Length: 245
Image 1: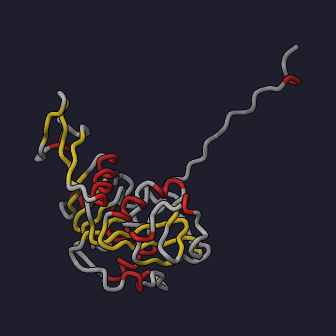
Image 2: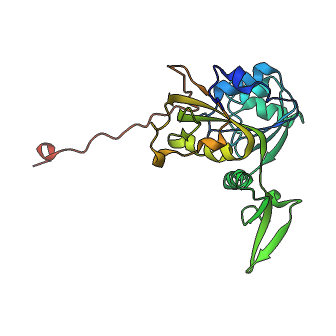
């Protein structure tokens, strides 16, 4: 099976439909499949349920799909950087299922592992547990959470080979690997496309069996920074030559 496609539109051809559930990788703006998201926007598909740690920012990442109102529901953990999201949610135009971040990660991992549900202490006795089954184990109270599985996962990797084996880099490894396992079809965009065998077996984070289609990003692909901060370092301590005598 040929996994490499010339562009995002070709890679997503025949996969998109109204009302589908899409997982979108990344953490903040780090490791988001921005080129694939843009192709989803251009397709015009609508009424999407999107599972993602966050909702991008205005005009970037999933923020593009919010601006075109292609998303009906978000299953997320943190969405505080997107004013469009807040406006639509407060107006009742967007559904949201909030999850504690660790719970969201485990729901995705469970879905990929074929685990339909699990129990966690997180959220017991709070609004998170409303309407959910709770149980007591060894004197402790737990909330039941359902595993998540999507029609499509779009992810970003630092490196991939022609067989679909992927390697991620730093923070981009937070959600992309588990999402790759938790969808019927996974499509990846990769910064560096290499030949089979060029990624050491010990460095493969996602085996190619999980990846159905891929695109290689162009040289000079822009990586956006959500919030740029610069720490001011204190002046160096006085050395021996500057000590008072």
